Amino acid sequence: MRNTTELPFCPRCGAKTFNSGPFKPWFCKSCDFKIYPNVAAAAGVFIFNTNNEVLFNKRAHDPGIGKLGLPGGFIDANETAEESVHREVKEEVGLEIAELKYLCSCPNQYFYGGINYNTLDIFYTAKALTETIEIDPNEVAAVYWRVPQTVSPEAMAFPSYRHALNVLLTTQGI
Ligand SMILES: [Zn+2]
Image 1 (cartoon, protein in one colour):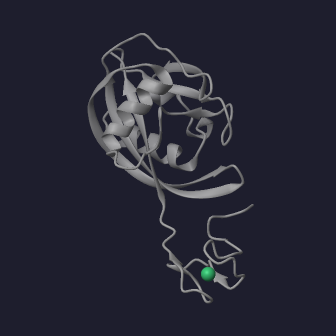
Image 2 (tube, protein in one colour):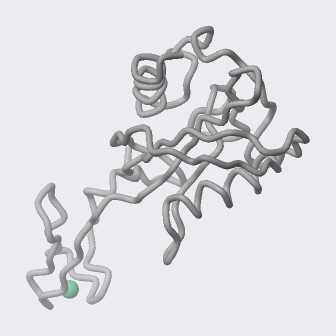
């Protein structure tokens, strides 16, 4: 597996003397080019309806195809985590949400396009303001409203999602 902590060539001068180990910054011995390989920020949300059910989605692509995910995704440049959650929820499932509250964060690894991205996943809870769901079929294969206690953490697509579900079940008094 190609990891973001491996880069065989300097991206500026092409030298093979690029040091891309676990320590930051990565640097080139030939041209002094430096890169800080920081984590990518992502956000996800547990959306509650009036029956105290949470919206889970079945992922339409890898990583984690067919497993359970949450609305959310990578945070864009110049976007807050909260803005990202509202945008991704609208794009993926067509819902408007309110009362966004921070739940927890958890490191994750996201393997996509031959690269293993180190991420920091930030999780929220929220309430659904609308009911009509319109899924983006490129992202979401299906959606399910489930009482969160009935969802097995093992069914979730990523270790960070399992962690967040456990935090939700143990801290939210639900
Ligand atoms: Zn170089």
